[in-house]
Image (cartoon, rainbow, N blue to C red; front, side, top):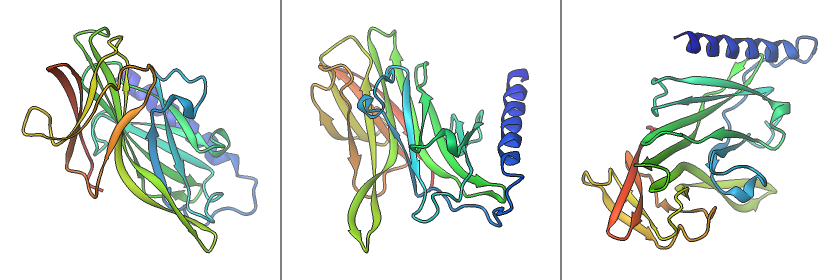
Length: 248
């Protein structure tokens, strides 16, 4: 409880600093910024060279065209559930601290744990509605030398052809997979629903553990089911993790 109160106090203090940053600016915002255009989690090590992908991933986002400067800071919120009611926490990100529209986050260190993320755009007039950024889930059982992987699921932006010079996107739900096991022979399996409890196998990607740091995964056409699962298969043996998705 003391740690939670300390974290909350720190978040409030950071928020006060950010809000006070523009107190001398005569052109104050009169309305909150719009919701971020998109947000997603990236587990590809090549995205940020030098990042330790065995411990960290990145969350990327962008603002709508013409509203890039409407937010002076962002709030990144995390929780253990998609409703953000189980141990929620928040972190204030100054716009100047995220010039390339991304932030580094840690992956879960415990077995069968998922972190959910969403981001708010804010200025001195208030904050937008939150944009769900995705979830990162981990399996590490019975130890780090056996089944050991994490997966990140998000709505990923796919650029469409320019229309009148304005960039547009379509959004595809997908999950990216990273193997952390020293075992180099495995397949990645994607399921609709909960694997082992009625989940339906929908995609198998073979030999995804051969090259360390190789990102694999898959996408869902249309709207995904309430749960998706990703498994790591060694021959006839497999272990999977299920992610419960929010109602967007």
